[in-house]
Amino acid sequence: MFETCADLTRVQQAFGFAPKVPLEEGLKRFVEWFRSYYKV
Image (cartoon, rainbow, N blue to C red; front, side, top):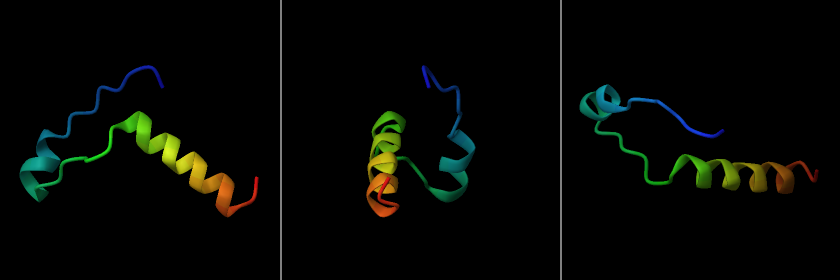
């Protein structure tokens, strides 16, 4: 993914949600977990 245009303004206002991990880092962590969990 080269860039994202997601606008989280409404989510932040409605739920007080704000991501703590940048998208790129989150995807990296997910892939590492997936490979470890499924032994791929």
